[in-house]
Structures are given as structure tokens and as C-alpha cells.
Length: 357
Image 1 (cartoon, rainbow, N blue to C red):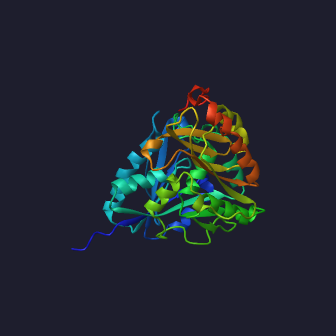
Image 2: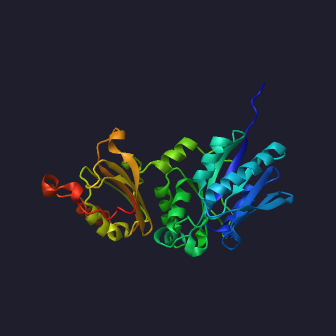
Image 3: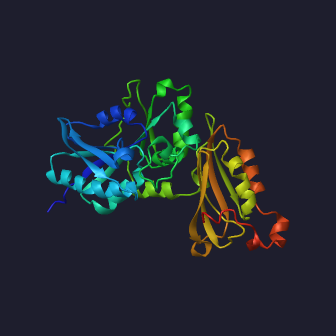
């Protein structure tokens, strides 16, 4: 008996629903059904609106209610039954899921892979604005300040969301490229943030110049590895067009107070950085380092003894116009000195990160 054929699904993400419109149109043909979710009324009424459309027009519409919990989690829980219904009808050969602007593709793809064997995630496509890309990756504005947060607990910033959408995408559509003075620099920036992605330019009307759906490019293991690969110097892209990625490593621990005092200098000129660090006053803890725009954060990953690695610091940082020597000098200055390594009572050091770790 032949195995049942899975229905390919394309995920469409990106901050601008206006720029996504022509890309969505390019994905949709007579064999495609699309679920389009927007968040225009999320703040005012606490709902995410959705429409189901195909080549013949709108088929259905409705709302998902979002309370004060995780909006992304509730969206996933609400979407799955809708997707199951569309697949069960057997009328379409391809599904497009256009996520709300503040949604990342990773949790959606993970849920689909884990719970819907009748669907095969085929392509993750992210639309970015060539005019605003560097600004979106470089600031510290919260999604909540732009009315885009997926509920009260959502404290992500625009830079973090933009970076994560790019980092998980198989295809990045560079919209408004004709309005950019340096489109090749932007293309290079996208490839530094995600060497897996294929960059497709859009014409002045926003229509993509290459395939954006049914590409077969999605590889769950590879996407998860890149999104979770906190720092790997072997996967750096060569510098060019003003875009540079720096790999910094040290076998010495960081002085917590000096690191805290240097945060602003570290993220200056850096659009995205990820890594693993260890603080002198927390010698057994393996800590995640992450920055997007002007915001940096630390989080607990576990104990060094649970890994095969000796304690160390590794950070990969990407920037436009970034001075690698300056960044490395700033990070080096945060390390314990040789004399401190020999004489200091590490665990007695003041802990400026006690409130977040």
C-alpha cells in the first residue's frame, strides 16, 4: 500500500504585511490555499484575525482569542486544528501559512514537525525591507512600543525578532531593493546572519524575482542547528561590502562588573551576536550570551560539567562598519587578568546579573 503523500507547507514571515502581499500572491496558484493571520486588533480586542483564501477568493475567516499568556503559544494551538481541517479536505496540493508580523517561524515549524505528520514544511520565507533592515537590526525599540507584541509577556525588541526571522529562513526576499543605495551590502548582511538562506530580490512592485515557495529547501535539523548554534567560528562568512563577522574566544572567565559596565561598548556597531560565556563569580554555570541591536541578554544553559567542553567564552558578532580590533579589545578588557586569576576570590565578586540569572 502506497504511503500517503504529505501536503507541502510554506511559512511566510516578516514585519511588513504590505511588503509581504506581492510575495504571498507569488506563492498562490490554483492548487494553493493560504491561511493569513494578522494582529491589527490584538491590542484593542485581544484577538488575532485569520482568513483562509485560495485562487477563488476568501473561503473562511475568524478570530483566535489571546489572553495574557503566551500569544505565540496560543496561536500555534489554535492554528493546528484549522490546518488539520484544510488538509483533510484534500482539495489543495500546497498550503501557505502567513504568520502575524511578530511571529517567528521556528516555534511554528517545530510544532508542525512534531504534531502534524500529514504536513511537510517545505520552505520558510522571510520578507525584509531593504530600506529599514539595518535600522530594524540596530535599534532597541520594543515590539510593545510599536504595538506589535504578542501579548503582555512579550518583551522582545524589533531587532531580536528581525534577526530570528532571518536566521530561520530558507529564502529571504529583499523588498524595496531598488530604493537602497547598497543592495549588495544588505544581501551580504543577510548571508552573514544566515548562510543557509537564499536571497531573492523583489522588483519595484514587490514581486520576487525567484522561487519563494515549494523550493524543498527546508531542512529541520539544519535550521535548528543554525538557530541553536550559539557560536561556531568555522561557519563565518568572509567580510565584504562593509559587513563583518567576528569570532572571539577566551579560556579565561569574564569579570561580571567589567562585563556589565562594557555592555554598551560591546553592542556598539553590532547588529547581532550569540555565544556562550562564563562569569568568574559563577564558575560552574554555562551562560548564553545574545544581543540584537542595542539590547544584550544572558541566560542559563546549564553546567559546564554536563558538556564535553572546558569552561570558555565564545562569541560570534556581526555588524555593519564593525571594527573587529576594537570589539576584541573591549571583550578582552572584561576578562580576569593574570593576577586576578591567581589571587582573586572569584565567588565574592559583586554580581550585577543576579536579577536575571
